Length: 142
Image (tube, rainbow, N blue to C red; front, side, top):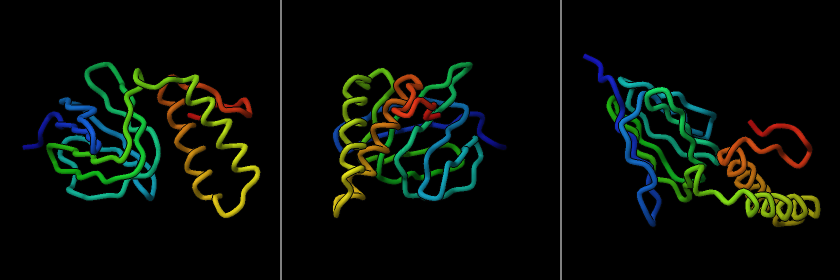
């Protein structure tokens, strides 16, 4: 018999960010997004930077995650993230400033190109999770 819900835990080295019973989870794996429903085949994946979403009743909630791992079991998903922020915790103005700074560093790309690219990706993800804010070029980051 398949479980009807998943126990979702999202933790960082500093704190527990999410501990909920959910209907489904979508998370950014290293090779792309994974959709997880109750009864999913067990797996372990490295996390990429992106928006983790989960559905609880009729509501969908979002968490910006970056780095770490996720363990998927038939009845639970455990996310051990380097960084994780709920949408309501994100300071959109600060994220926009970080995005602008990262894009400037990226434009002047030198040996720090990869770090600048990661900073831009994290800032875009934070803005997306905070409320679907549009990128600097004027198109949606959804």
